[in-house]
Image (cartoon, rainbow, N blue to C red; front, top):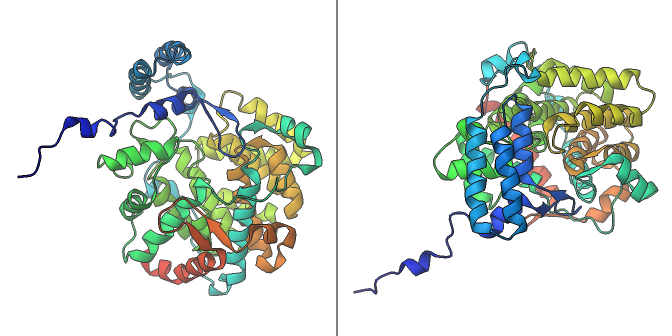
Length: 443
């Protein structure tokens, strides 16, 4: 007979590891080393969604005291109580958030979206490869700058801002979710959010903010769309917007189809305005296959945003601000004032950074990368998005060698089995999925 097991063998399988709770309260952003407190962001984001957070704020002050005194085990329970408080937080009926619509189902979200005009001539391997190279370049550059205000970045880095600091590092959490999507698409004859969610569980070892909550939900059998909203104060952060370029790449020139794919993917980890951010990112990438003018892409993208939502309101406002302002730095001041009570990872200010950098960059890759860096906030995500859009417009052949050569041939990730991927192979897989996707979806 085998020896009896011991409870001591389970000690290392901590339900709430001490290192994790410490990271929730005090951490540094990989790459830029910007200071971060995820718990503060959770409270802030819940208030942004029109909820009363006074109870959580009191618990937060107590938690800071425990952190300072090194009482990590006690801090675990306080952390959980904060999440409980945020989930149960009452509605602030006077908050501006409640003035807007917030559709959650595809039929309501897409009501009014134009139908796609399918033109197979828009499929181009050079443009798909350009999109990937632009994304990897932008994200690799931006990871050194994320989490800081743009004015500080300009002052510290001067003319070196907006380009690689040293040898570019392609490790980036954003791209891992795109790879998971591609694998779900490749391996399934029916594609729903359940297949994408299952691939997350199989491939993604760890997430942060909204993605962390989603993975915890999925682990317990809570699947989309609940996985993106249940107990998730980060559901309207940038996590969907940062990764949904892939849906535009597999739906070249078909923005409505791209929007649908972005919807089912985004619902794994986000809800409401967070999902709309993912849709918008996919739509602009898809439109880049048929329009060379970035301003036209921006204007066309407004047709694929659910009406009377706060996301639409923010998008229209930033476009108007870009039209009337004399410089992108003036728009930066507008963004910082408008969103001073929002976390730097929230979808709204970062949407504005994407639009502003594209608008004033006028299709020039170098200029756009400088502006998107000089705007601050979540620079790697924003630079990855604008890099994808410009990369599609220009194609791989049209991208400057100063951006492409330092990347080398390979993308490196922390996904088991995908530690090193040839960038051209990734583009080939994406291109092969453009035909498969048409038989899987009908929107």
